[in-house]
Image (cartoon, rainbow, N blue to C red):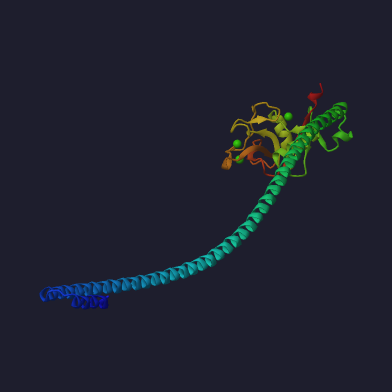
Length: 303
Ligand SMILES: [Ca+2]
Ligand SMILES: [Ca+2]
Ligand SMILES: [Ca+2]
């Protein structure tokens, strides 16, 4: 472009123009050239700036690409790590699930076994309850049968005794002593008061009832030398003495200071033939003590 300007100056020399004008023109041309040069310089600068800007942008772009790449690598790494962690966690969860499932099955199995055992125990309990009821019913039936048999036995004995009461040598009075209208059996064994009474009942009699002083003296005269249970008790109500036939006590032959209900347990009466106080021989004792006893069968039952 500079060459084009100087060519134009040459052309001005060929044309015949005023020297002053020519100078001015040259000045203008130089000014223009300078302006053009300045403009070119500016353009170059702008171009350089643009190039610099472009380079900068390229660097930035490259940097951005690098950053993006690094980010991608980071993301990829993170993704891989997370995947590994997720896989590990998944495996752990699966392992725990398997373990819990096995434990759950074990517990369910235990529950089933316990339920079966509970049902078996329940069934056994019901069976035992039924058996208990059956045994209870059988026991009640047997008790009734025993009472019936005992009553029959007593009736048979009574018939036997009543049929032969005038002849004590008969077998049914073999070991009995007769006095007035009664027969007396003196035991050689020792039992509690209730067992002794049961023995008398099985013989068709009962424990002796001492109705009067004459009967008391008859018993003393036997000189047995031991204590004997008699049919007298205050078990139902303390100090309300009754005979076994339900009659209240009238004639009393207690020893001195008796009955004393020692230790609050003496509810059955004995007499002893080794009387220290004459005809006063009775004493109250604990019914559970084992003593001999006397049974009495009064033949007035037969009338
Ligand atoms: Ca009597
Ligand atoms: Ca008593
Ligand atoms: Ca006593």
